[in-house]
Structures are given as structure tokens and as C-alpha cells.
Image (cartoon, rainbow, N blue to C red):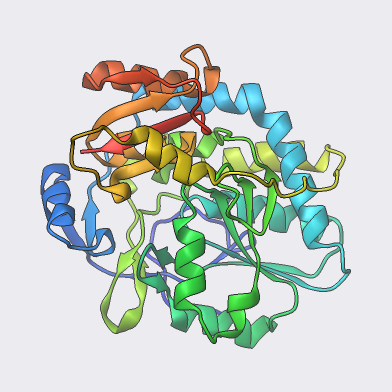
Length: 343
């Protein structure tokens, strides 16, 4: 079952995911044009920048993170999978591309290895706009609501959670939990860790997501994507999934951590990012090491805040900041490992 013809040339395996993405031609812009249009009120969901090959810094960050944290990530994924399967019924994973796609693909492999009736569907969401309702309705019609969960990689400020809740009011899927690996914002319903962790695939874009572009809005309320075929030689998607699947199946699941109480990390990060006497736009503040990385890969960063300069999980951010001549501030009270502020 699929609600769309996905873009040709992607490298996702059919057994790993059903992609509910329309093959369409987006409005291609340069990064400078994108920044100007977003600053003028145009949704980022209407724009797409041509993706370039990952830099040496990105590829090293990906490899280092997988080597350093792969076993930890496998254990976290095993714990998430066990929690999702705890009731013994079918499990339907609805991943949010692109950060949620590798997570959903590994989870569905593991659940099936445990003889769980599991399916993985990927349905696009655009912050502030909502999900592709045609795609989501088709998934719910096929699988029903019991056992359905949205899947993403990490949280930043909790904007995706807010978009899900605000745009799905009255929809059956409004009650579905949001499950993530890393939840430093304390915003998800289910999380394997509340630490601000660098997931290896945060360091790359399409080359660890089946060569798919970021999703964008198309006519009729649908969401689309293109494939970046010129990056095929750098594609590591299935090697990444195979490595994580092996590590996850070898891990012993543990109970998910209890949701923290206390001050809102995102609110504190926003306050620490504020510069007295200067204009402030909360939308330009991107907390978490994953979101900060995306700012360097997609936007023009103005500042980088880190909790510790010697932290290996922010080493790539410091390297990218050095290349781009981006000011770095060490803020020991920062509730995240890193916060990037876009221009």
C-alpha cells in the first residue's frame, strides 16, 4: 500500500519502509536566496537547496560517532523496540523524514526479528504546517490506531511535537506517541535517553537517508521529495542500517528512562542565547547537537554555543565553525551540548 509514487533512484529497500512521498519538482534556491525568503516569511517547506557532497568534516563526524557511540545507540534502539512491542500486538511505525527514517528502518527490522507484526511507513511533516494527511490517513486505514507511533531521531525545542499536536487535533493519530532516541528537550512521549546525543546520521544528509532530499510541500496538501542521484557514490544508507541492526540485535533492552521534571531545557536555552539589546528571533535558535549540526549543513550560522569545548560530540561543530568563521561561546550552564543560532 502506498499513497504516492516515490522519487525514482532512492536507495531505501522496500522491506525497510514504505515511502509516502510524491515525486515532484520543487523550487530550487541557493542558500542565500533561501535565507532571504525564510526571513521574508516564506515557509522552508516551499523551498529546496541543491545538496552538495558531504565534506570531510561531515564524513569524519559520521564515522567517529558510529565508532564511538554505535553500541550505545544499538542498546537505545533495542530498548525503544522492546517498549513499543510490550503489549504483544501489531506495531506501526510512522517515521518523520529524514531524521526518523533510519531509526524507523532499524526498529522495524528488529521488531520483525522478534516475530512482531510490524510495518514502517514514512510520512512527511513540515514544521508549522503539519503532516501529509492523505498519507497518514492511508496508514491509519490500513493498520488502525493500536500500536501506531511516530518516530524521529531527536528533539530540539519540541517544534515537531507541537506541530503534530496542533495540526492533528480531532484526528485519531493525535493520540499516537512520539518516540525518539534522544530527547534533550524533554518533549517526546517516549525516549531512549534524555541526553543530548549525537546520532551518527545527524552528520550527513541524503547520503544516509536513501539519497532523499528534505521533504517539501506540493499541490493538494501532499509532501514530496527528490533524489540526489549525483551523490550515489557517497551513499552509506544501507551500510549504516546493517551496522545498527547488528548492534541492536546484540543489545539487551532495558526499561526506558523516566521523564525528567524541572525547568524547561528549551526555554533556558533560548534565554542563554539571547543577547541583551539585540533583536531576538526564537525561531533562529536551534538547540541540541543534532539541530545545531543541521544549521551548519543547511543554513548560515551566526553563533555557536557549546557546554564544553572538549566534548567529542561537538568536535565537528567546532571544526565547522572554524571553517565558517562562526563565533563560538562556551556556556557551562547550557542544558544542551550545543545550540546554534542562524543568521
